[in-house]
Image 1 (cartoon, rainbow, N blue to C red):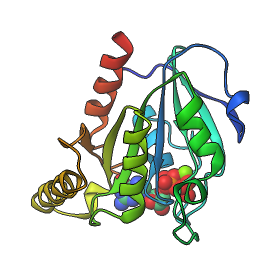
Image 2: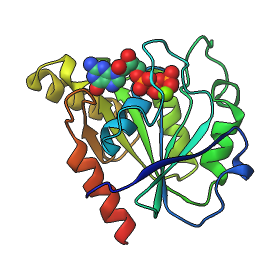
Image 3: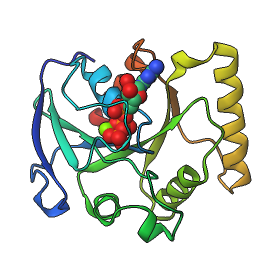
Image 4: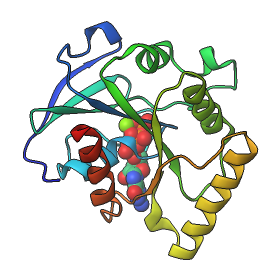
Length: 198
Ligand code: GTP
Ligand code: MG
């Protein structure tokens, strides 16, 4: 899919103030610093569309970016930064759970996980939460440039095993990406294009 236009529309912490247009949207979620904003820039080919930082906690609000005038990418704040593990309600900011539970335009969430790490408790908790709420999602492994192809495969296989152990019947649809190298760009855009056509 060709990205012709990508524009920032609005930031807010109130789901009811998100754009009203009934356009499909795709939201990026995951631990702080996992690479959500960088992935939005990589997918759109716009280097500074979403603000990124080496320090966790850069994105603080729900950010809507309108793509090709007919769908949205949504950048969200990370979870898991400077927070002790609490109940799901307290672990994930209220406006994030509000977004996933109430945003009718959301067609698919992308849960980003660092491909170098074994499955993190907080990510499994979020994935299981999406499952409970029946929110469609894919898993996106980030920072693939940091490890070899062989290790990437091993880590994806280990993740799959972990999810099956958590009670998932199969590994959700997933993508291996690198925002610095553009890996996975065509695959993720083709997936979005396919969903948009449905
Ligand atoms: P928050 O907004 O704080 O939740 O973080 P985020 O998930 O949006 O992460 P962000 O995109 O700001 O990236 C965090 C850091 O990881 C930055 O220093 C990026 O340059 C780096 N980074 C992101 N994606 C990649 C990648 O694919 N490869 C490499 N090597 N670094 C990456
Ligand atoms: Mg960010």
